[in-house]
Length: 421
Ligand SMILES: Nc1nc2c(ncn2[C@@H]2O[C@H](COP(=O)(O)OP(=O)(O)OP(=O)(O)O)[C@@H](O)[C@H]2O)c(=O)[nH]1
Ligand SMILES: [Mg+2]
Image (cartoon, rainbow, N blue to C red):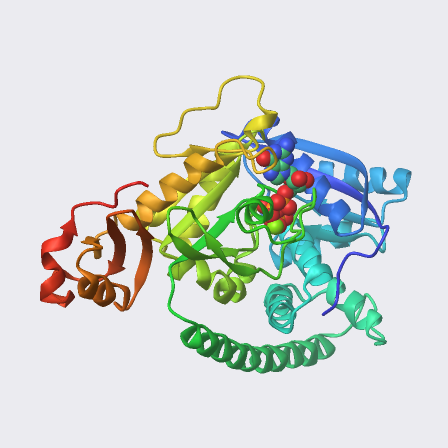
């Protein structure tokens, strides 16, 4: 895995305001981009924003503005320019041609890929990241790629011939096929492990990066996972059994965060990691409600979940960091408000999760009197149990089953819904 940005590199950020997006929103996006660049090891020395009726097809911003960017790079001794918008391969080439020598041109997606490359640890994550990087680079093989081959000890220079580029392309394509095969075998192993694992209810924490997923994971499971005030702290997600109270047990999975314009090249390889979210009975979509852009974060998360084909009925929105709010919690139908740090609202969250898990179609709830000892034994031996609780007079148990699958002697004990303890 190679990284594109260099540690400590001086960087100029460029944003584009195109109607109907407002200047304020673009500034917010640049704040986020600045954090991304810092996470990738660079430092931002300047920001430039252009307002235009439409993007320029060849250089994104106007040609006069490109010149201004060049002057600013000279003045600040910047080595790279990062655009908040996605750039096409030809836009990168055109921009690099017009900017001072040795100034690299990157877009947001390139920086995100860099961060992933820096932070991925497990074999699976590293393979996914390299695959994502190469898929991203293939259509953009230009000077930047030569920068990479320089890093790798090659001799890439600016005026490299088409033939060298063709060879590079072929090598990259070969490596991509190799990585895909590797990933397929890692995924097969993972699937096998999951099948062997006792089939239990699964819950997944998903959401925008820095929303507090890992903090909530820690609060709910007590596991000491990495929590950091930085973007993409979690790249190798954890799963852990968690008692949700009232006899309900589930496996909770923390996942990689989402971000605006998460490169598609990254979503695809990380699909298998997010598969835990796809198969989860309930997805907790965590949103940092104290962030000014929380509604956009919610929308971005919704879009990724849609791309992963997660059924919206399976999603519970969790508004986190309410301890940081000055005013009241914004009202959002069906959402639960919590603070992973103070623990406020966590009890309500657990109650809601239990209710959502146990009131799904296909779940049968039974209340077996303890006096019927044989009935209790039969019930406790049922497969696919979600929850059980012993009360002084009865056993309350929930299983995934159709009414027909229940032993006939238990049918009389059916309850319409799970009774809270
Ligand atoms: N005040 C406050 N801070 C919180 C809360 N939840 C999380 N944080 C802080 O927010 C930052 C990010 O938290 P994480 O749990 O690492 O966020 P994450 O969603 O796992 O982020 P990634 O793994 O990067 O996607 C940390 O500094 C946390 O301490 C909360 O409820 N209140
Ligand atoms: Mg995390």
